[in-house]
Image (cartoon, rainbow, N blue to C red; front, side, top):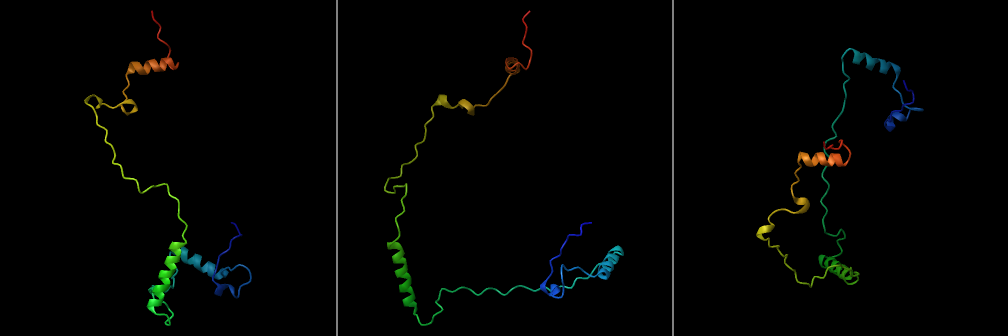
Amino acid sequence: MDNDWDIECSDEELKDCKGPWEPKPEEIDRLYTMLENGESQELYWKCPGYRSPSPEITEEPEDDNESKELVLNKRIIYLLILFIYRPEEPTDFDFMDEVTSPKLKIRNKGEETLKGSAKKKTASLDGVLSNMRRHNLLPSKKKS
């Protein structure tokens, strides 16, 4: 068994302890005896309950000397300064262009079948066997 183990404890348990904390041998023996007999150790725990709700944050200033109008004026001035000195961000869009509607493709009657890789692939046994012969996976057919 590995003897290099350590159990983290609360500060109260460590204040009288020198080195890593370890339970007394009598306590360990008592707990193992309880387990062998099928007994269980009672745990004493008290639910701390729910914490009280946080107070709601209000927009009102904590300083009672300032009036609401003064605070509102300060906010307006701050926003104006931000708007005036904000660097203009370059964009790739020109919003003055008119929006073009998408053009729908009109299909002719003969173009109803799928083309290219969209077609469903079918294989015949003759085609598979000829491909296998071509790649030397089957012996070639000898004509007699």
